[in-house]
Image (cartoon, rainbow, N blue to C red):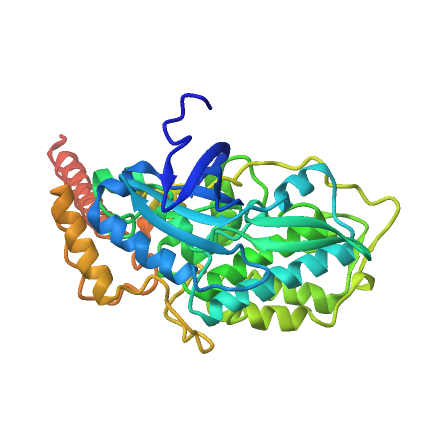
Length: 414
């Protein structure tokens, strides 16, 4: 764009040259420094105006910069220049997994290979106590390179940890998303505990990876509703359909089906504890574990519903969880969790206090003293119980009055 004010601007010695595209986490530009071409991601401009958010970004970027893995996009630099918040990354040539899936289904062997590589990269991040938070096909990039042995496909994971900065505009108006009860994610891949607002850990990535694996094998997601509310409630309450139910004629090894269903368990404690354990469970399977009969329908009517990152407000979340059958529990002891990525640290508390001061917002209400680890503690349809009891008493008194009046009236008749 000729009128883009960032074109030609220098950011830590990197010159912004042209705009490549934009996504949920920001705008991506082509840039260069010392003859090298890079990708420069510029995050929401509101982030640069608030000191507390800038500090949080710098802390996150510093941690992400340490993720040196061949299957994770390499971060070369980051910073804030004239309120422009940016991350400099290696420039990739290829396409996202999302773009590939929009054109055709994957051969089972290729699907399993991609998934194992994704889990290997995510496992490396989990060992560093970093949760991706938004694992989906749009954040899996396939790089194609010509080698002496032919074309080679390399998987790269994008946007580690950046989901928390998706709604900076809203954060700048109201304070932090977590303290205002909002949650961020992509509905088609969100774990139940992510929807209900329970603190996330590594197992939220396991759930998203389970959705991704199901999608790669069946060529459709386990839950695929057009309405967001239906989609989110399906993650909370509906059983995961078998592959045969989703794709008649598809035959999947029962052991592989159990692996997928474990990754997609509603309760985090029933899932694999991390991506590494999930990958180990997949190690024994190859293309022979999946069969498609000639008459099986190809799921080419793919829906894009629920594939964009969104912010879910507390009132929507409460409406979604108003059921007698809430299956999400954070009270169960997890199988050796490595990290609770949303547990507030001393620095988090300090940054939140700074943010409230900068935004001149009311401080959040104090937390209730009772145990609220399971959401919701009181279901909406339980709340009117006291009022319902009172109504029964009133109705009974009215009935007694009516009977008494009838008896008196009968006695006065001649």
